[in-house]
Image 1 (spheres, rainbow, N blue to C red):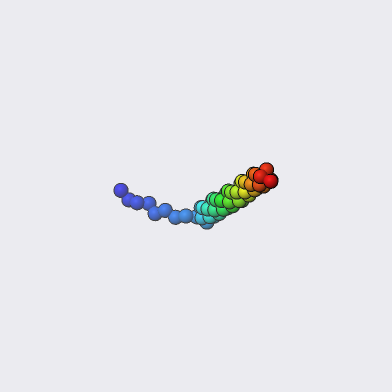
Image 2: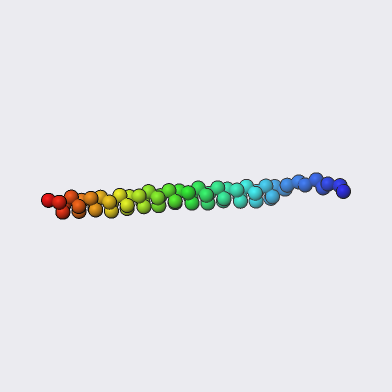
Amino acid sequence: MPEEERKLTDADIDAIVDRFENKVAERFYGDLGRGVWGVVWKAIVAILVGFAAYGSMKGMK
C-alpha cells in the first residue's frame, strides 16, 4: 500500500496559525478574567471580615 505524500498549502498553514492564535488569546483572556474575579472576590471577603471585626470591637465598648 503506497503512502501518499501530504503537503500543506499556504491556506492550510494560515488556517492552523489563525486557530492557534485564537485559542491562545481565549485562554489568556479567560485566565486573566478568572484572576481579576479572584482578586475582587478576596477583596469583598476582606471588606466583610473588616466590617464584622469593626462591629465586634464597637460592641465591646
